Length: 289
Length: 145
Image (cartoon, rainbow over all chains, first blue to last red; front, side, top):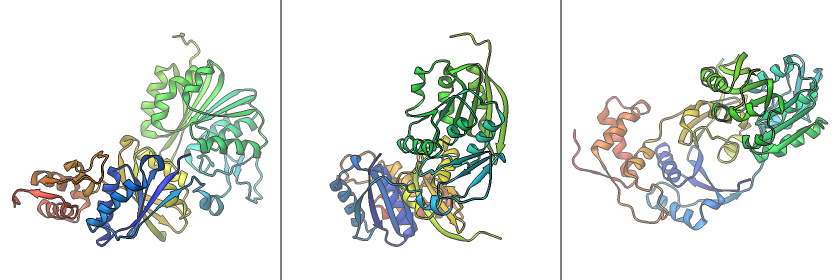
Protein backbone atom coordinates (compact mmCIF):
# COMPACT_ATOMS: atom_id res chain seq x y z
CA UNK A 1 0.00 0.00 0.00
CA UNK A 2 1.34 3.38 -1.02
CA UNK A 3 2.58 5.92 1.49
CA UNK A 4 1.86 9.49 0.42
CA UNK A 5 3.44 12.84 1.16
CA UNK A 6 0.95 15.52 2.07
CA UNK A 7 1.89 19.10 1.29
CA UNK A 8 -0.40 21.57 3.09
CA UNK A 9 -0.41 25.15 1.79
CA UNK A 10 -2.42 28.32 2.41
CA UNK A 11 -3.30 30.34 -0.70
CA UNK A 12 -3.17 34.15 -0.61
CA UNK A 13 -6.10 36.22 -1.87
CA UNK A 14 -7.79 36.05 -4.34
CA UNK A 15 -8.26 32.47 -3.10
CA UNK A 16 -10.27 31.04 -5.99
CA UNK A 17 -7.88 32.16 -8.68
CA UNK A 18 -4.73 31.38 -6.72
CA UNK A 19 -5.97 27.91 -5.71
CA UNK A 20 -6.41 27.16 -9.43
CA UNK A 21 -2.93 28.43 -10.27
CA UNK A 22 -1.26 26.54 -7.42
CA UNK A 23 -3.16 23.33 -8.28
CA UNK A 24 -2.12 23.68 -11.92
CA UNK A 25 1.56 24.02 -10.97
CA UNK A 26 1.46 21.12 -8.54
CA UNK A 27 -0.50 19.01 -11.06
CA UNK A 28 2.34 19.48 -13.56
CA UNK A 29 4.65 17.71 -11.12
CA UNK A 30 2.29 14.81 -10.53
CA UNK A 31 0.44 15.97 -7.41
CA UNK A 32 -3.25 15.33 -6.96
CA UNK A 33 -5.04 17.41 -4.39
CA UNK A 34 -8.01 18.89 -2.64
CA UNK A 35 -8.85 22.41 -1.52
CA UNK A 36 -11.30 23.92 0.93
CA UNK A 37 -11.40 27.72 0.84
CA UNK A 38 -7.75 28.84 1.01
CA UNK A 39 -6.31 25.56 2.36
CA UNK A 40 -4.75 23.27 -0.23
CA UNK A 41 -3.64 19.74 0.46
CA UNK A 42 -1.61 18.15 -2.31
CA UNK A 43 -0.46 14.53 -2.37
CA UNK A 44 2.22 12.58 -4.16
CA UNK A 45 3.42 8.99 -3.66
CA UNK A 46 6.41 9.07 -1.29
CA UNK A 47 8.85 7.51 -3.74
CA UNK A 48 8.08 9.97 -6.53
CA UNK A 49 9.51 13.15 -4.98
CA UNK A 50 12.04 14.01 -2.28
CA UNK A 51 11.33 16.65 0.39
CA UNK A 52 14.12 18.85 -1.03
CA UNK A 53 12.40 18.94 -4.44
CA UNK A 54 9.06 19.76 -2.82
CA UNK A 55 10.69 22.62 -0.88
CA UNK A 56 12.09 24.09 -4.11
CA UNK A 57 8.62 23.94 -5.69
CA UNK A 58 7.00 25.58 -2.66
CA UNK A 59 9.61 28.34 -2.59
CA UNK A 60 8.72 29.20 -6.19
CA UNK A 61 5.06 29.53 -5.17
CA UNK A 62 6.07 31.79 -2.25
CA UNK A 63 8.23 33.87 -4.60
CA UNK A 64 5.26 34.30 -6.95
CA UNK A 65 3.26 35.60 -3.98
CA UNK A 66 0.63 32.86 -4.41
CA UNK A 67 0.89 31.29 -0.94
CA UNK A 68 1.63 32.18 2.67
CA UNK A 69 5.22 31.33 3.66
CA UNK A 70 4.13 28.68 6.21
CA UNK A 71 3.58 25.16 4.95
CA UNK A 72 3.92 21.56 6.13
CA UNK A 73 5.09 18.32 4.52
CA UNK A 74 3.91 15.13 6.23
CA UNK A 75 3.99 11.42 5.52
CA UNK A 76 0.52 9.86 5.39
CA UNK A 77 0.33 6.18 6.26
CA UNK A 78 -2.38 4.03 4.64
CA UNK A 79 -5.56 3.98 6.73
CA UNK A 80 -9.27 3.32 6.45
CA UNK A 81 -10.44 6.76 5.28
CA UNK A 82 -14.01 5.47 5.01
CA UNK A 83 -14.29 4.78 8.77
CA UNK A 84 -16.31 7.92 9.52
CA UNK A 85 -19.01 6.96 7.00
CA UNK A 86 -18.90 3.29 8.00
CA UNK A 87 -19.44 4.01 11.70
CA UNK A 88 -22.02 6.76 11.41
CA UNK A 89 -23.89 6.49 8.14
CA UNK A 90 -23.71 2.89 6.87
CA UNK A 91 -27.22 1.48 7.40
CA UNK A 92 -28.42 -2.12 7.05
CA UNK A 93 -30.08 -2.81 3.71
CA UNK A 94 -32.50 -5.52 2.52
CA UNK A 95 -32.11 -6.71 -1.07
CA UNK A 96 -34.77 -8.66 -2.98
CA UNK A 97 -36.65 -9.10 0.34
CA UNK A 98 -34.40 -12.07 1.09
CA UNK A 99 -30.91 -10.79 1.69
CA UNK A 100 -29.94 -8.49 4.54
CA UNK A 101 -26.56 -6.71 4.49
CA UNK A 102 -25.37 -5.18 7.73
CA UNK A 103 -22.19 -4.29 9.56
CA UNK A 104 -20.87 -6.33 12.50
CA UNK A 105 -21.91 -3.53 14.90
CA UNK A 106 -25.47 -3.10 13.53
CA UNK A 107 -28.40 -4.18 15.70
CA UNK A 108 -31.51 -4.73 13.61
CA UNK A 109 -34.85 -6.52 13.92
CA UNK A 110 -35.07 -7.14 10.19
CA UNK A 111 -35.17 -10.87 9.45
CA UNK A 112 -34.07 -12.33 6.14
CA UNK A 113 -33.25 -15.71 4.64
CA UNK A 114 -29.68 -14.64 4.06
CA UNK A 115 -27.90 -12.33 6.49
CA UNK A 116 -24.52 -11.07 5.39
CA UNK A 117 -22.12 -9.17 7.67
CA UNK A 118 -19.91 -6.71 5.79
CA UNK A 119 -17.40 -4.31 7.35
CA UNK A 120 -16.45 -2.61 4.11
CA UNK A 121 -13.49 -0.39 5.10
CA UNK A 122 -12.24 0.87 1.75
CA UNK A 123 -13.58 -1.90 -0.45
CA UNK A 124 -16.51 -1.60 -2.78
CA UNK A 125 -19.69 -3.56 -2.13
CA UNK A 126 -22.14 -2.87 0.68
CA UNK A 127 -25.26 -3.53 -1.34
CA UNK A 128 -26.21 0.15 -1.28
CA UNK A 129 -24.96 0.85 -4.77
CA UNK A 130 -27.24 -0.06 -7.67
CA UNK A 131 -24.53 -2.09 -9.41
CA UNK A 132 -24.15 -4.39 -6.39
CA UNK A 133 -27.82 -4.70 -5.43
CA UNK A 134 -28.81 -5.67 -9.00
CA UNK A 135 -26.13 -8.37 -9.03
CA UNK A 136 -27.38 -9.68 -5.67
CA UNK A 137 -30.91 -9.79 -7.14
CA UNK A 138 -29.62 -11.81 -10.11
CA UNK A 139 -27.95 -14.29 -7.76
CA UNK A 140 -31.19 -14.66 -5.79
CA UNK A 141 -33.07 -15.48 -9.02
CA UNK A 142 -30.84 -18.04 -10.72
CA UNK A 143 -30.17 -21.64 -9.56
CA UNK A 144 -26.95 -21.62 -7.54
CA UNK A 145 -27.00 -25.05 -5.89
CA UNK A 146 -23.71 -26.93 -6.45
CA UNK A 147 -22.44 -24.40 -9.02
CA UNK A 148 -18.85 -23.20 -9.25
CA UNK A 149 -18.70 -19.40 -9.19
CA UNK A 150 -16.05 -16.83 -10.10
CA UNK A 151 -16.43 -13.29 -8.71
CA UNK A 152 -14.18 -10.82 -10.55
CA UNK A 153 -13.50 -7.55 -8.70
CA UNK A 154 -14.84 -9.08 -5.51
CA UNK A 155 -14.33 -5.93 -3.36
CA UNK A 156 -15.79 -6.66 0.09
CA UNK A 157 -16.56 -10.20 -1.12
CA UNK A 158 -20.30 -9.51 -0.74
CA UNK A 159 -21.39 -11.35 -3.90
CA UNK A 160 -19.01 -14.27 -3.28
CA UNK A 161 -20.50 -14.61 0.23
CA UNK A 162 -24.07 -14.52 -1.08
CA UNK A 163 -23.21 -17.11 -3.77
CA UNK A 164 -21.80 -19.40 -1.10
CA UNK A 165 -24.89 -18.95 1.12
CA UNK A 166 -27.08 -19.79 -1.88
CA UNK A 167 -25.51 -23.24 -2.04
CA UNK A 168 -22.82 -23.13 -4.67
CA UNK A 169 -20.04 -25.66 -4.24
CA UNK A 170 -17.00 -23.40 -4.70
CA UNK A 171 -16.41 -19.66 -5.12
CA UNK A 172 -13.26 -17.89 -6.22
CA UNK A 173 -13.10 -14.12 -5.73
CA UNK A 174 -10.38 -12.10 -7.43
CA UNK A 175 -9.41 -8.47 -6.80
CA UNK A 176 -6.33 -6.49 -7.81
CA UNK A 177 -6.51 -4.15 -4.80
CA UNK A 178 -4.68 -5.21 -1.65
CA UNK A 179 -7.26 -3.48 0.60
CA UNK A 180 -10.00 -5.58 -0.99
CA UNK A 181 -7.94 -8.75 -0.82
CA UNK A 182 -7.59 -8.40 2.97
CA UNK A 183 -11.08 -7.05 3.53
CA UNK A 184 -12.84 -9.80 1.54
CA UNK A 185 -11.03 -12.46 3.59
CA UNK A 186 -12.09 -10.76 6.84
CA UNK A 187 -15.68 -10.69 5.62
CA UNK A 188 -15.60 -14.39 4.62
CA UNK A 189 -14.53 -15.21 8.17
CA UNK A 190 -17.24 -13.05 9.72
CA UNK A 191 -19.83 -14.99 7.72
CA UNK A 192 -18.31 -18.45 8.34
CA UNK A 193 -17.79 -19.07 4.65
CA UNK A 194 -15.40 -21.97 4.07
CA UNK A 195 -15.85 -22.82 0.39
CA UNK A 196 -14.63 -19.49 -0.97
CA UNK A 197 -11.12 -18.38 -1.78
CA UNK A 198 -9.92 -14.81 -2.40
CA UNK A 199 -6.95 -14.26 -4.71
CA UNK A 200 -5.01 -11.01 -5.24
CA UNK A 201 -4.59 -10.39 -8.96
CA UNK A 202 -6.45 -9.73 -12.20
CA UNK A 203 -7.94 -11.52 -15.21
CA UNK A 204 -4.45 -12.82 -16.09
CA UNK A 205 -4.93 -15.39 -13.32
CA UNK A 206 -7.78 -17.02 -15.24
CA UNK A 207 -5.35 -18.89 -17.50
CA UNK A 208 -5.14 -21.39 -14.64
CA UNK A 209 -8.91 -22.00 -14.73
CA UNK A 210 -9.91 -23.13 -18.26
CA UNK A 211 -13.63 -24.00 -18.66
CA UNK A 212 -14.02 -24.18 -14.87
CA UNK A 213 -17.00 -22.07 -13.82
CA UNK A 214 -20.79 -22.36 -14.11
CA UNK A 215 -21.36 -18.73 -13.18
CA UNK A 216 -19.04 -15.75 -13.61
CA UNK A 217 -19.96 -12.44 -11.96
CA UNK A 218 -18.08 -9.20 -12.63
CA UNK A 219 -19.19 -5.89 -11.11
CA UNK A 220 -16.40 -3.57 -12.25
CA UNK A 221 -16.61 -0.87 -14.93
CA UNK A 222 -17.10 -0.55 -18.67
CA UNK A 223 -13.41 -0.39 -19.63
CA UNK A 224 -12.25 -3.35 -17.60
CA UNK A 225 -15.26 -5.45 -18.62
CA UNK A 226 -14.69 -4.75 -22.31
CA UNK A 227 -11.02 -5.67 -22.12
CA UNK A 228 -11.46 -8.72 -19.87
CA UNK A 229 -14.67 -10.44 -21.08
CA UNK A 230 -12.59 -12.67 -23.36
CA UNK A 231 -10.67 -14.03 -20.35
CA UNK A 232 -13.86 -14.60 -18.35
CA UNK A 233 -15.44 -16.56 -21.19
CA UNK A 234 -12.43 -18.89 -21.48
CA UNK A 235 -12.84 -19.71 -17.79
CA UNK A 236 -16.54 -20.59 -18.31
CA UNK A 237 -18.08 -23.98 -19.01
CA UNK A 238 -20.57 -24.45 -21.87
CA UNK A 239 -24.04 -23.09 -21.13
CA UNK A 240 -22.66 -21.17 -18.18
CA UNK A 241 -23.88 -17.75 -17.10
CA UNK A 242 -22.02 -14.42 -17.25
CA UNK A 243 -23.38 -11.60 -15.07
CA UNK A 244 -21.95 -8.15 -15.76
CA UNK A 245 -22.46 -4.91 -13.85
CA UNK A 246 -20.85 -1.53 -13.19
CA UNK A 247 -21.80 0.18 -16.46
CA UNK A 248 -24.42 2.66 -17.68
CA UNK A 249 -27.41 1.83 -19.90
CA UNK A 250 -25.79 3.67 -22.81
CA UNK A 251 -22.72 1.42 -22.58
CA UNK A 252 -24.75 -1.75 -23.08
CA UNK A 253 -24.28 -1.95 -26.87
CA UNK A 254 -20.49 -1.87 -26.52
CA UNK A 255 -20.57 -4.58 -23.85
CA UNK A 256 -23.06 -6.70 -25.81
CA UNK A 257 -20.89 -6.49 -28.94
CA UNK A 258 -17.86 -7.86 -27.04
CA UNK A 259 -19.97 -10.63 -25.52
CA UNK A 260 -21.23 -11.62 -28.99
CA UNK A 261 -17.67 -11.74 -30.34
CA UNK A 262 -16.91 -14.12 -27.49
CA UNK A 263 -19.83 -16.41 -28.19
CA UNK A 264 -22.10 -15.19 -25.40
CA UNK A 265 -25.75 -14.29 -26.00
CA UNK A 266 -27.74 -11.71 -24.08
CA UNK A 267 -30.43 -13.16 -21.79
CA UNK A 268 -31.87 -10.32 -19.71
CA UNK A 269 -30.99 -7.17 -17.81
CA UNK A 270 -31.88 -4.94 -14.88
CA UNK A 271 -31.61 -1.17 -14.66
CA UNK A 272 -31.63 1.26 -11.74
CA UNK A 273 -30.89 4.99 -11.99
CA UNK A 274 -29.21 4.59 -15.37
CA UNK A 275 -26.93 1.79 -14.08
CA UNK A 276 -27.36 -1.55 -15.81
CA UNK A 277 -26.60 -5.19 -15.01
CA UNK A 278 -26.92 -7.83 -17.70
CA UNK A 279 -26.97 -11.62 -17.89
CA UNK A 280 -25.40 -13.50 -20.82
CA UNK A 281 -25.16 -17.19 -21.60
CA UNK A 282 -22.17 -18.92 -23.16
CA UNK A 283 -23.27 -20.54 -26.40
CA UNK A 284 -23.56 -24.29 -26.47
CA UNK A 285 -21.96 -24.88 -29.86
CA UNK A 286 -18.79 -23.00 -29.23
CA UNK A 287 -16.13 -23.86 -31.74
CA UNK A 288 -12.84 -24.05 -29.91
CA UNK A 289 -10.46 -21.44 -31.20
CA UNK B 1 -37.25 21.19 0.59
CA UNK B 2 -33.72 21.77 -0.57
CA UNK B 3 -31.06 19.87 1.33
CA UNK B 4 -28.77 21.80 3.64
CA UNK B 5 -25.26 22.21 2.26
CA UNK B 6 -22.48 21.61 4.79
CA UNK B 7 -19.46 22.29 2.61
CA UNK B 8 -17.68 22.39 -0.71
CA UNK B 9 -14.48 20.56 -1.58
CA UNK B 10 -12.41 21.16 -4.69
CA UNK B 11 -10.57 18.12 -5.98
CA UNK B 12 -8.00 17.58 -8.70
CA UNK B 13 -8.08 13.90 -9.60
CA UNK B 14 -7.43 11.72 -12.62
CA UNK B 15 -10.44 10.74 -14.72
CA UNK B 16 -11.63 7.11 -14.44
CA UNK B 17 -9.04 6.32 -11.76
CA UNK B 18 -10.51 7.60 -8.50
CA UNK B 19 -9.68 5.39 -5.53
CA UNK B 20 -9.96 5.83 -1.76
CA UNK B 21 -6.28 6.83 -1.36
CA UNK B 22 -5.30 10.52 -0.91
CA UNK B 23 -6.51 13.06 -1.90
CA UNK B 24 -10.01 11.57 -2.08
CA UNK B 25 -9.74 9.50 1.13
CA UNK B 26 -8.76 12.27 3.54
CA UNK B 27 -10.81 15.01 1.84
CA UNK B 28 -14.10 13.07 1.78
CA UNK B 29 -13.57 10.65 4.65
CA UNK B 30 -13.39 13.39 7.28
CA UNK B 31 -16.76 14.68 6.04
CA UNK B 32 -18.49 11.32 6.49
CA UNK B 33 -19.12 10.92 2.77
CA UNK B 34 -19.11 7.35 1.43
CA UNK B 35 -15.82 7.42 -0.46
CA UNK B 36 -16.52 4.25 -2.42
CA UNK B 37 -19.82 5.64 -3.69
CA UNK B 38 -18.05 8.79 -4.89
CA UNK B 39 -15.31 6.77 -6.64
CA UNK B 40 -17.85 4.59 -8.47
CA UNK B 41 -19.86 7.60 -9.69
CA UNK B 42 -16.81 9.64 -10.61
CA UNK B 43 -15.13 6.79 -12.51
CA UNK B 44 -18.39 6.11 -14.36
CA UNK B 45 -18.85 9.72 -15.40
CA UNK B 46 -15.22 10.22 -16.44
CA UNK B 47 -14.54 6.87 -18.13
CA UNK B 48 -13.91 8.71 -21.41
CA UNK B 49 -11.30 11.00 -19.86
CA UNK B 50 -9.16 8.26 -18.35
CA UNK B 51 -5.95 9.51 -16.73
CA UNK B 52 -6.58 13.21 -17.41
CA UNK B 53 -6.42 15.41 -14.30
CA UNK B 54 -9.89 16.92 -13.85
CA UNK B 55 -11.05 19.67 -11.49
CA UNK B 56 -14.10 18.67 -9.47
CA UNK B 57 -16.28 20.74 -7.19
CA UNK B 58 -18.04 18.52 -4.68
CA UNK B 59 -21.00 19.68 -2.59
CA UNK B 60 -21.62 17.83 0.68
CA UNK B 61 -25.11 17.91 2.25
CA UNK B 62 -26.06 17.52 5.91
CA UNK B 63 -27.34 13.96 5.32
CA UNK B 64 -23.85 13.13 3.93
CA UNK B 65 -25.11 12.74 0.39
CA UNK B 66 -23.19 14.66 -2.26
CA UNK B 67 -23.22 16.10 -5.76
CA UNK B 68 -20.29 17.00 -7.90
CA UNK B 69 -19.56 18.88 -11.08
CA UNK B 70 -16.64 18.25 -13.39
CA UNK B 71 -15.22 21.54 -14.65
CA UNK B 72 -13.12 22.31 -17.68
CA UNK B 73 -9.38 22.49 -16.85
CA UNK B 74 -8.59 25.72 -14.98
CA UNK B 75 -7.23 28.67 -16.95
CA UNK B 76 -3.91 28.21 -15.13
CA UNK B 77 -3.57 24.61 -16.36
CA UNK B 78 -4.38 25.65 -19.91
CA UNK B 79 -1.81 28.44 -19.72
CA UNK B 80 0.82 26.01 -18.48
CA UNK B 81 -0.02 23.60 -21.26
CA UNK B 82 0.19 26.39 -23.81
CA UNK B 83 3.60 27.55 -22.62
CA UNK B 84 4.82 24.08 -21.67
CA UNK B 85 6.50 26.08 -18.91
CA UNK B 86 7.09 23.40 -16.34
CA UNK B 87 6.02 20.33 -18.23
CA UNK B 88 7.87 17.23 -17.09
CA UNK B 89 10.86 19.20 -15.87
CA UNK B 90 13.05 17.23 -13.54
CA UNK B 91 14.47 20.46 -12.17
CA UNK B 92 11.72 22.55 -10.67
CA UNK B 93 14.29 25.17 -9.69
CA UNK B 94 15.42 25.87 -13.25
CA UNK B 95 14.51 29.41 -14.23
CA UNK B 96 11.82 29.38 -16.83
CA UNK B 97 10.98 32.42 -18.86
CA UNK B 98 7.61 31.75 -20.36
CA UNK B 99 5.66 33.71 -22.89
CA UNK B 100 2.23 33.41 -24.45
CA UNK B 101 0.94 34.98 -27.66
CA UNK B 102 -2.38 36.85 -27.82
CA UNK B 103 -3.63 34.13 -30.17
CA UNK B 104 -3.03 31.54 -27.43
CA UNK B 105 -4.76 33.80 -24.90
CA UNK B 106 -7.74 34.01 -27.24
CA UNK B 107 -7.92 30.23 -27.71
CA UNK B 108 -7.93 29.66 -23.94
CA UNK B 109 -10.46 32.44 -23.37
CA UNK B 110 -12.84 31.00 -25.97
CA UNK B 111 -12.58 27.51 -24.55
CA UNK B 112 -13.07 28.72 -20.99
CA UNK B 113 -15.92 31.19 -21.75
CA UNK B 114 -18.67 28.89 -20.37
CA UNK B 115 -17.05 28.95 -16.90
CA UNK B 116 -16.06 32.64 -16.83
CA UNK B 117 -18.20 35.55 -15.80
CA UNK B 118 -17.65 37.39 -19.06
CA UNK B 119 -19.98 38.81 -21.68
CA UNK B 120 -17.49 38.87 -24.51
CA UNK B 121 -14.26 37.24 -25.57
CA UNK B 122 -12.23 40.43 -24.99
CA UNK B 123 -13.03 40.54 -21.28
CA UNK B 124 -12.37 36.78 -21.06
CA UNK B 125 -8.98 37.42 -22.71
CA UNK B 126 -8.24 40.12 -20.12
CA UNK B 127 -8.97 37.61 -17.35
CA UNK B 128 -6.73 34.97 -18.91
CA UNK B 129 -3.94 37.54 -19.37
CA UNK B 130 -4.35 38.55 -15.72
CA UNK B 131 -3.98 34.95 -14.56
CA UNK B 132 -0.89 34.55 -16.79
CA UNK B 133 0.67 37.66 -15.20
CA UNK B 134 0.06 36.29 -11.68
CA UNK B 135 1.95 33.22 -12.83
CA UNK B 136 4.89 35.32 -14.03
CA UNK B 137 4.11 34.61 -17.67
CA UNK B 138 4.28 37.50 -20.10
CA UNK B 139 2.16 38.05 -23.21
CA UNK B 140 4.11 38.86 -26.36
CA UNK B 141 3.09 41.70 -28.67
CA UNK B 142 0.41 44.38 -28.48
CA UNK B 143 -3.10 43.76 -27.28
CA UNK B 144 -5.21 43.13 -30.40
CA UNK B 145 -8.22 45.13 -29.15
